[in-house]
Image (cartoon, rainbow, N blue to C red; front, side, top):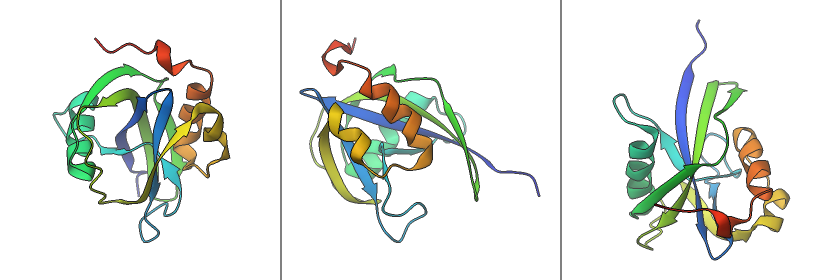
Length: 139
């Protein structure tokens, strides 16, 4: 059986030098692990379009998509290979109507390494640790 490749996109939502993190619900795949919110890229969508759609679906929020955080991360889970691309983003609305997550929390860059991350998100978290979030520009 061929290995399933799943292209997903995530948002490193930033505000006031903090990053929004989400904890997956216990009953879901990778339950109780922290991640950057987002989801699968549908056929015909750009990663940025997918990210806007996913945040609308998951939180009922609109976002402004900024630059890509780091190169796309490939991670092989038991269920397939995830290709994760994460972009910096800013919230335009603040609803946080949770669908797939049990918790949403703002963290300083220094606090990120203390979370129990989903494996594909770890390289992204490490890249964010090295950045001054105030230097990220949204055009």
